[in-house]
Length: 326
Ligand SMILES: [Zn+2]
Image 1 (tube, protein in one colour):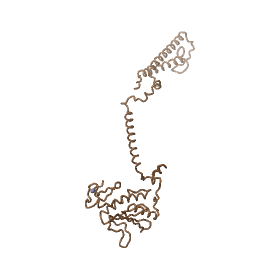
Image 2 (tube, protein in one colour):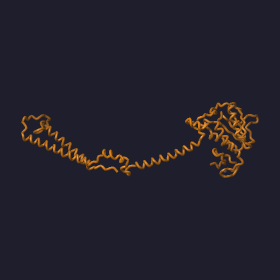
Image 3 (cartoon, rainbow, N blue to C red):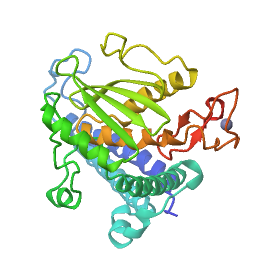
Image 4 (spheres, rainbow, N blue to C red):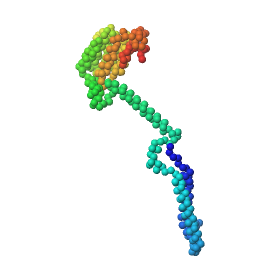
């Protein structure tokens, strides 16, 4: 702990300085007045008219006065020096003991120590969070943001951010879309894809999943805009042969699945890699081939309120009833 300041010495020193000032002021006043008193009348401000020569007695008195005042000043200077000696010399201590600067003089008087401990814990927790977040984000290869990476990382992640998808625009050629869905139908042998363009540029894809259900996708480029799911015995064409993509299924089960499919398009949507969004959506959609066979993961029943588990989890593809969804 740092040495306390001697307040008594400081007080005595200040008092001595004030007295010293008075002594010096008296000395100059005495010298100004000269022998025999002031030569200027202090009341009228005019020089005195007396022409009398100062007597020898007056000169002795003047010298005695000056000598007395000078002795008083000398004594006061000695007292001031003693007061200064009683004080510590901070500059000398700093020069030889710099380590004292790092010590807190009074822990209980300020909150520096608590603030430092709190700051250290905060930084420690932040470091842990950043480490965990970095680990989780590095696992997600299929990034959706358009943040640029360094060239090395573009090489390590083929098809990642560095390579822009050829399906990024809505003006994708129809031949390219056809080739894309032909490739998808080879990946999923239990899915039948039929491509039609009854409205011109927009592509309509009819999906038949085993003998479970039928679906209809309305695409703008490769962006899924609308999904309708119907039963295997229902049709998307009216009696006169026109395509009807707006009327719902007459079964409650498939109307529910239509809602979930439209939700899934938003979940898998990505503005840059639209082909990846369609591929992810279809990978999720084919899980409905167990619509009537797989029991609910939560209640382990196939039917609840006369309905099969119509919900498929976006990430794990587990099936749940509407009321059993996590
Ligand atoms: Zn259930």
